[in-house]
Length: 559
View 1: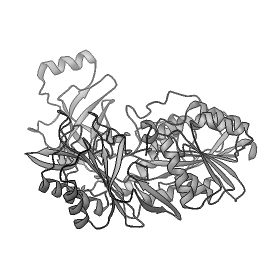
View 2: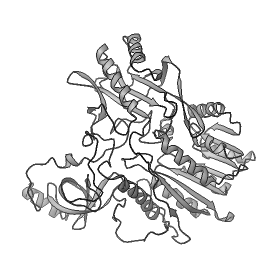
View 3: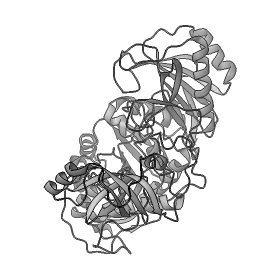
View 4: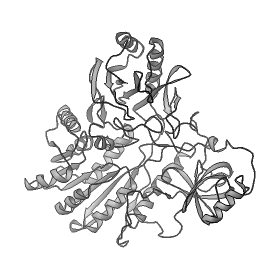
């Protein structure tokens, strides 16, 4: 959520994730939405079907397989059973014990594949045919799903996605955190129907030893959405030129080639409409698109923000320079055609980089912010301030965070990695005093403004690293009953974990966007005297591989 905000050192779908996270995020996949995704139709675009394990590579391929001692070689075709799915959304299969990752394949399926690449421990294969489809396989509704990198799981039923996301979390807790999950069998094949396996599944998480005893962790079913489409309140669309015309959409999977797009099924419809109209106006006025190879051209990105509750919208034009030809005409046409837009801003980014935002932002027309609510808390959203991209599920996640904090109105709470104060202000409604800390200065300024906007006087924000500020607070006599952490994908800083273990608050609530680093940090807290009680996965990004989780821990001395 606040992830890239900290990585970037300035602002912000996650800013934490998503997403792909937001304004300073490096552009890849679907215009910065998420990573590469599988496309079934792409997997079926093959040459002649050779059947069995015919090798087009001939003797050279056979020799390579023999040298490597592998059962398959590049260009082999073979039939495999898909026994699980890795964290990138690729099906996991075995060819005579050798692991193959297959984009577009689902757990439980028998598929015919063509081997694309082999390594010593695993390889990659292209899906040719689904011989025995999963009962959870569905037709992806998006017409450019096989080209775009924004979603990875549209070909899987929503119930199947939710079950896998829970399993992904369970797998990380057991493998990395060495925690016992209530009701889960330990050991056996890691593949399981929907297990998270594969290279990088435990990236950044070295093997750890731990005690699997105790009462165990309860992992609840993933909380999904009643309507898992059109949930994103922010679009970040790269602009380019195709066949001499201005286009804007998403990057084709694994490339920087822009696929022109008029409709994205996970974006709010109004975002689609604004982007479409801005592109049309740009073409009408002869606006040039930025060329990342030459560094020339004006318009780099169109960023649209939609406030779900108030209906207000903000348009941000990211340009390769300060001067905008026909600026008055452009603003006039936008106001005329898109009356719900309350703010038109320009962000200037003259650098040859794939970071979306530059350092300078100015208002071209209207206000510098739009307003929205999460629950009863109001937030001012500026061009570069982070705001959760799925406001419906954000409220679900934050309500669970408050529940796990066990607040009665008398507690002192510390919110580490507080960002613009979203969780802090939710907690402040139920606590005596809340202290928020965040390393990004601009985020703390936003947090203070949002506290003032809501008339909340029982919350204090400070700029700095949590591991530096919290010990200083302790020296000042501030003792936390509850510490909430919501770190970037890399997890908590080791010094922050040490600080928590020194302060020994009764409860710790851990909000995570990365099951691997969550599990690693839980192991540290468990070894330091905490018990992980319950974990709730929350589907913040339907049809992608990303999963949020909020976890409740209690210090054993208070049980």
